Amino acid sequence: MVVRVRVMGLRFGALGLAVCAFGAAWGLPIDDAAASQCGNASWYKMGIRTASGEPMNAAALAAAHRTLPFGTRVRVENLGNGRSVVVRINDRGPFVSGRVIDVTQGAAERLGMIAAGTAPVRVSVVDGGPRLTGCG
Image (cartoon, rainbow, N blue to C red; front, top):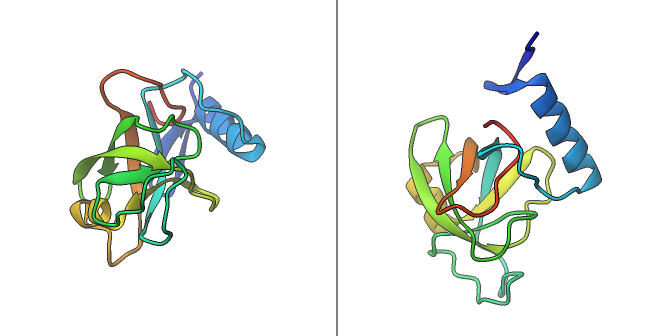
């Protein structure tokens, strides 16, 4: 029997939701369970340097993720309006519960989420690379 759970308009298998909740609560690294990760995204433009040591560029198509290696390219799809953008991970975060990625202001503009500040998203690694835990 497969149990589906709907959280904030997103569907998760009960096992996938439990894995995400457990991993997030304990800060466990992302594993090879699924091709994408779903949750909320926010945008930012603060700071002088990113965690990778690069200068912060609010106009760049870049993002912060808790565990993906620096340089990983991911597609971020705004599930509310269908817009997407490919960004490069160069920072760490987000540090707010329920958020899976922080994108730069430039990426947020392309995603159509500037006014709202946050949006429900699907994050998928492009060009192979690490896989994500989440919405498959």
